[in-house]
Length: 500
Image (cartoon, rainbow, N blue to C red):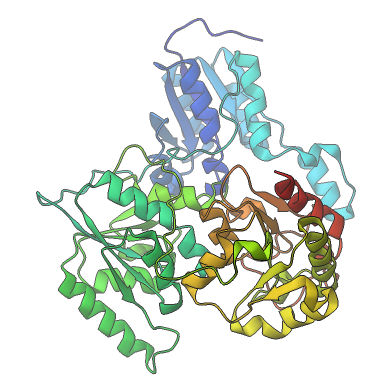
């Protein structure tokens, strides 16, 4: 270990590309800053990534890499105390070698192991370590403890000046017209908007089938329904929404939905401040862009959209009010467990025979029937599960519940087992322990059930994830991500919750 004795060392991190790898350096900078609060921390990147780096909360300056010789001259002129090479290419190695810097460190990329696996499918223990863990390893040589070991909310800000709003309460618009699960995971963002900007009113633009989620939160001043899926003319519906939003005279729009249409809608409505993700298809219509990181949970990614407006971005999941709906069963019915087995994406469906065996095990363990829920399009699938499990073990409400009724059906349960879909996130929001059965998608995409008491059951395969939302058929043709998941694994995760 080589110790730096200065209280304000000057340290350069070399990570020239790509954007995803640069985003992964945030914990390294966090740990360096925690060790030396007065340090000057800089990064060497390619010019196209200067904008992203400028949004880091811990990087003091970025050095653009415009060529080997200019970069070497800049490094030698800056008189760094240490250089940390997180790029590990022949060019970055030579640059580090020739740099007149007293302390030089480098992470190990395991390039050979990667190449052998890709070309010849030769496995190696070196590949089991995440890139982020490799980034953190060289810190030990500096005597820097790796306290921050993963991405955290607040790693990246929106950059630039904060918007100047008029005095008084603000009128805000939240655009989220994606799937049910996406809407549930937007609720903490809505809650934090109300906390960060007291007195402001927030109107939510969402689809009719997800409006009940925002209504149940009790946080929305109003809800505007976007009927883009059912309107006879998509252009006419877009124009109607734009006129309604323009008439609302909103001060700002927060857009977690990364679609071209959502950003264009906010721009067309004349909303002066439009905050969204830098990876949005409509980013050119945004006034404030926040970096998007796959390594954060979707709740935290959404909360990061408030970085142009607020400092402390953390907030607990808001509750969901019961409203006028009641649970479709009584406590005396003894229903303690529920499942959501269907999905619009066939590859997200665990085999029906497995679900049926799980239902029988849960019914035996809980000494009661098991709740089956799903949408109208999943009636046949859940009917087959009910037939295989035995109707005496099931309360099948598939296609029979409104959104408020679905929430009230899940609320009294002790455990809820679901594929990667909206009802799983509803359970987590209600505080019901959720067990996610993940196949084509992975928890690294950020859509796992939010909260410490929840679990994800999955099979580690190199081909996962194969899609963001799932697909009609397995791209490899073997469907091992679901076929290798055993009933015992899923039941074991669920049984833990019933024991508690």
